[in-house]
Length: 144
Image 1: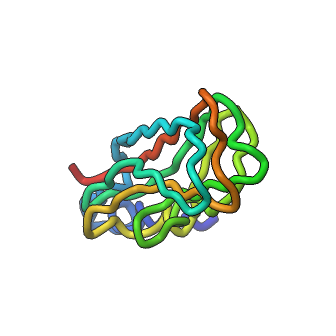
Image 2: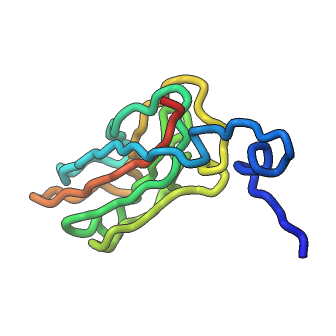
């Protein structure tokens, strides 16, 4: 049977002259940006700044954990300034169990060449206005 190499291992493990693996992808350490968003009735069209990804960062995945649902009408998208849906398309969040997100093309994308500001965008309706909140964890790796 044939042996195939992933994109990340082809250069370093797939040749007889081994090259150093890219530390952002292969055997990398994950870093996390945590953002807690209070349900303050943010309006349709509002954005919330979540943090910044440094140059060289590679998005891995994200997790949303909510103390109560975000409502049946308001949608939440997660991305970066200039591409608000880069990591999660706008969708309702109606569960309180941890929910993973990530778009395959963005997980497989090349590292960012410049710093990126992470944002959450609210659309379709206002966010709830209560004592509840949600936590968004963004996981990424970089060469540092």
